[in-house]
Length: 243
Length: 243
DNA sequence: CGATTGATTGAAGGTCCTCAACAGAGGTGG
DNA sequence: CCACCTCTGTTGAGGACCTTCAATCAATCG
Image (cartoon, rainbow over all chains, first blue to last red; front, top):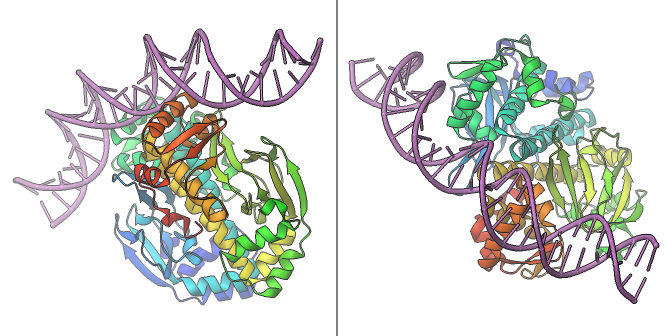
């Protein structure tokens, strides 16, 4: 498990190699970056909107999310992240955060100086290409989320969001396809889908009755990924083979 | 007006210079790319979902949008574009389109070979940085759209989307702040906000009665941008000074 | 062990959708 | 050149989906 690597670099290199070929020099340069590891509890805000960001945050183990807040105080989660994800590629090139980043579970993270990573992205074409692709896939996922909250009904919307997250957890690592635990509270699911926690609860009951998942403490457990995919017509093409 | 430039390169260079400093060599290399200009009518599909893309599309003059379709056939517009925008930065590094690109009005465009632009992005740090920033701002706008469709009510949602587009039109060029014409049909506004055209019509009436805008043939006209901004609590920070 | 967080269910209500009809503008073909 | 047709905008009525408010219960935690 990534949590046991004492080199956070290993997780980043593994992720980037899935996105572009890296030669030994590239890997050596990535490994030589100064990582500052940290173990953080659930619900910790890692980056807050409006702040100036000098460190990029790598998620080594655990779950995290990014969210924004509307003028009247309502919260919208705009993405979830799994082990290996770079939580804020955008801070390679944009100095000010336009949203919050927060842990969903207890997590192991590592901070990397943004200017050092930016220098590698600009100087080393392979690393640049890998980070480019990561950022562009990120954007593709946002587009799918706009479609998800804009045009799907509540049940389908929740099923689609969970299907995506399950697909990304599977791509990132170990777990088996079924009985996959996603540690999201119903309020977090609501904030990610633009619904209320009460309505999420009712829709989860439907998905449970359909045999797609079960509800556990502080999370849902995918019981039949095939059924969940079918309910949401989930097509992973937009993940661009990152999953 | 950009439409009169016989060099589409001028528009691209002007855009990228707002995002990062370009030295004379950078500009010369950008100008030397083989642009293939084309005049297209409104409603022309420039890129379709699933296709393999070898040319990037630059919007020289006019309006365009990108959209996706859900499994049950409902359409969601995920972004609008104005003169100077690169319509598909993502195809620098992702070969297959995950959404459609379509003109909203008659438009002048120019095609650029993706591999040539990609080579510049990887070899020339300044150009790379400018394109990076463009892609990352793109993603920031998508995040705001997720919030918009997820957490704002219909009236505020429409006002916010129109405020953003107005801000970007103003940043891109000439027009004066008020009496700014946005050539979107009510159905296009509906597809961008996750609403129905009927409900958009009713909300536009409210915005009209509030003095924020007027409805014209195939479009809306911003009459009081300040009021529209106030209604939607529009804060352009997420455009990262691109507007 | 009280307090807090999260899950669950019910009832009532509101925002937005669906269906429907019609008017006006613009384009096209006979 | 005008009839026709399509596209867009507009308005009304009814209903569905989701929200809001509320109460209860279980689990976790200081």
